[in-house]
Length: 300
Image 1 (cartoon, rainbow, N blue to C red):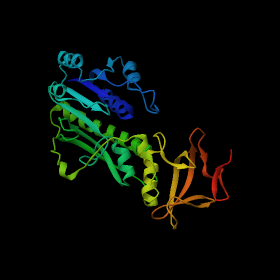
Image 2: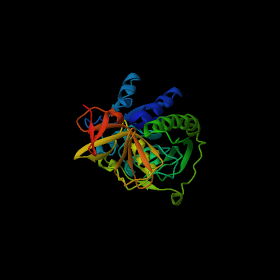
Image 3: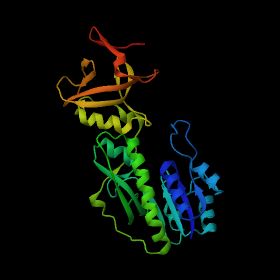
Image 4: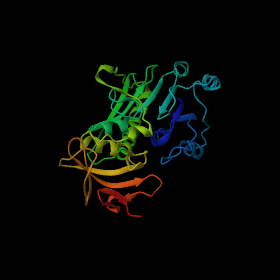
């Protein structure tokens, strides 16, 4: 069985490790150049490929020269593990036994982009990892295997992503022997039971204080480190709120109702702020802020 793998991020790294542990024959890896504007907190697929002597490319798998190379390699399977380019039908048609994707949700829920972040932001209690066949429509092909993942109320998106990575390895560990033997199941996906979500930009982290405290808390934990963070403005300065906790109480949304601990009113309940960062400054605990004459100041 000859494999071509498209991979990036921790899910890509760990799923390749599992395939190699099981003796899979990976002939080529497509991956990405790291973006200079992105915080690189995850493991390097390129480094893993180099350590195993596997050739890799950072060009688009859909490019004509890549498609020609795929035809020459004639893989039995293509796998996609958090590869960021949509693989087009011309490439999907090349592997003899199909092309499969590992998606970071319990499909058909949270099809599309950044599924872990969306699940946390929306206050879900469970997500998962799903291995499915790729078709032209995103995240819509037959399911081979899935593993659920619990989301605790205290979990950040990073915490959940770590759990999803472990679940992805579990799925690949179970599925690969069945795929290689030709006995893996194919369960049609019912898209009516799911949802599709688009990508997120840093600007989407702007806090709307008229929303309930729990909703704002979910946003904060859904985009906190290593993501860009949820933010608000104080006297014209951007302030990122990295950590907070919802508490009972009432007040005018967006107003500071206490400074010990620093607490802001929302549309339903209060939000106790715990860790903040004024743009251009270091991140600090909220107790570094004080109130004077009704205004909030950072003790520098």
